Amino acid sequence: MLLLGGARADAQRSCAQKEARSWEVTIAGPDERGDRLVVEGIVTGSDGKPVEGAIVYVYHTDASGYYARERAGNTARLCGLMRTGADGRYRFRTIKPASYPNSDIPAHVHYVVSGASFPEQSFLLEFEGDPHLSSSAIARDRAAHEGFNATYRGIRPIEKRDGAWRCQRDLSVATR
Image (cartoon, rainbow, N blue to C red):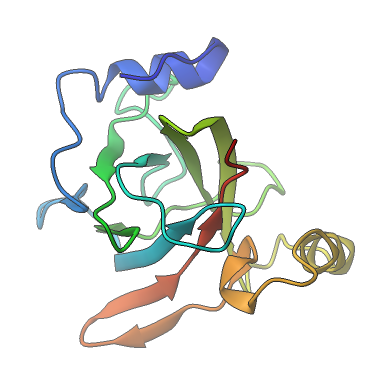
């Protein structure tokens, strides 16, 4: 189990009893309010090859923009752990998160990825078309991922298919 500091540690604790056993996980069940979302991707190393055994931890807000049912809390209840297979793939099924209430921060999913061959690394997933995304944020994201396939960008297109929003977010980790 990876250990994190600050608010991420609070969020991590809510997933502490879960174990990353599979490359895919369902985070939000059918009773969770919100639009269904499926995110999948591949974790690759510095050499561009898939990373087997990477632990992918994700967490996000609910459809109202809160991490916890008690509005003052910051422990993420919508979270999941996955372990990539030999192909580096991961997938999670959840609901589309909302922006924090009364904020101009875009809706997003937090990622923390760790593995035996690389240190813990953090990523974000934000969605094209979010009204809180600025043109400068989009430009920074494109510049930060220059030279990579577009699927590695943190701001991703999202499309409705088969009753759910779908998105691909590949992750490139700095391996040793």
